[in-house]
Amino acid sequence: MLRAAFIALSESRWLRGVAERSRFGQRTSARFVAGTQVADVVRAAAAVNRFGAGVSIDNLGENVTNAEEAQASAALYHRLLDEIAADKLNANISLKLTHMGLDVDENMAYEIVRGLVAEAASMSPKNFVRVDMEGSPYTQRTLDFVHELHRVPGNAGCVGAVIQSYMRRAEADIEKLLADGIRIRLCKGAYKEPEEIAFQKKSEVDASYVKLMKILMKSGIYHGLATHDEAIIKEAKAFAIRENIPRNAFEFQMLHGIRRDLQQGLVKDGWAMRVYIPFGTEWYPYLMRRLAERPANVLFIAKNLLRQ
Image 1: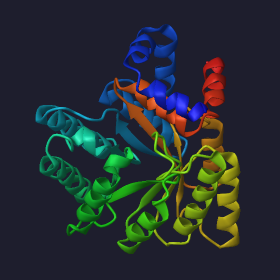
Image 2: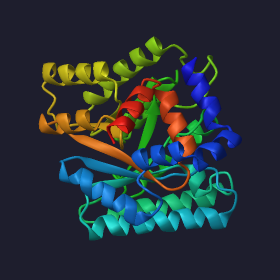
Image 3: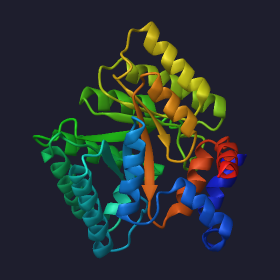
């Protein structure tokens, strides 16, 4: 019920306007989104690096409506890669295909992302582009993009996908990605999807996550487990120990501003950790989808805001 409510809220333009103008909304966005400028997110990434975690940077936005907007989004990501190299940050980038113009011109979007992956692959050390997953109308197209980009000579290991455990097709998609040696970020899922293609009950989504998580951890490929669920994190740690999987053979991933104590605790215990840091003006739909993905994050947000 809560999940559906937050998804509905993410799509409300009126509520978005109210939230963006309110003092509470501005305070909330300041905690969980690293400002609106590249300099803001670079500072936030450096701070995360200092406590020993890596970073994935996301310029918030999706569904651009013209080629000029797509090219502007790409230019910003190229600047991010330049800043990462200049400041020697332990950071990579995450992007959405609709932000790169997928709905405007598929060939253009492919060329834009191909250029970003090529830059990441040419860096020393090589960097990485995570292609985020969007709603189900984009699932197959997104996976096709990632497979095709990964096959380009020099790109292997420099571009990866996201799999959502609530999707019934997730295991089959993982098998195909693993066959090509593609790195995966596993999350639960944050879009409203019908029952015929997606699990609806939290218990089913969690069970799917744990099953897929174990497949990824034993694959020998470096994957990301995106979750704040302490029960799942505990299971992952126990599974790694039982199966003699090194603590740096995969990474936990969490959102900027949520459970910093848990992030730092994992790093202290020797587990690889990456923090997903968004920036930009499109914070309202982003935050609502994160709450839809795990409504318990409402408590984390409330506690973290009260600590300020």
